[in-house]
Image (cartoon, rainbow, N blue to C red; front, side):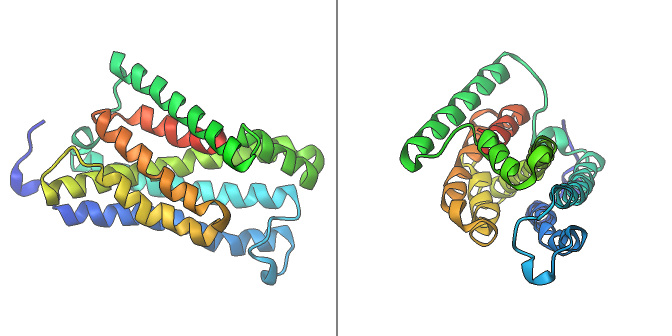
Length: 235
């Protein structure tokens, strides 16, 4: 698709939008105050897991709504400026299916290595379900469902960050084969985990390299990278 050069967004616009997506992710910290009140905890317990299942569900529901608003806001901008098709490919074709298979294999190997190194049980979603069962009893299944939904929506914003950082890097450095999305993701979403979830932050930061590389290798195909991101948190 051809565009008039003077109407194309500048590189700094993509950089700002990538940080806007990151900012929407960071709004979860604000939700902690609201969910703490809903759960009946004091604000001194803000960093602790909700006592009640409905507290966890409320936290994820509010966060999901904020994230979906942010995702649609940025996606709408891309559509209005008619740049979406240049930034990412949503089409399905034979190579996409090969890349999806590759994404599944990468996640499976990564999960297997992690389970051997840290003696962690896989899939991760089952381990989290067992934890919720201990905390919330019969509500464990519905709580797990909302957590998985939370992962799906979180990865939409993470995907936008990869797309936007990639375009910013390409416009600034003029080399399209370098995974700028990986570097942007590592320095933002990856590093913030040292604040939100310190225990697994290093692993997440290193893992942030992989989706950006797959995005470049896959000619900016959306679905293989999105699947890789989601499965990385479930398996």
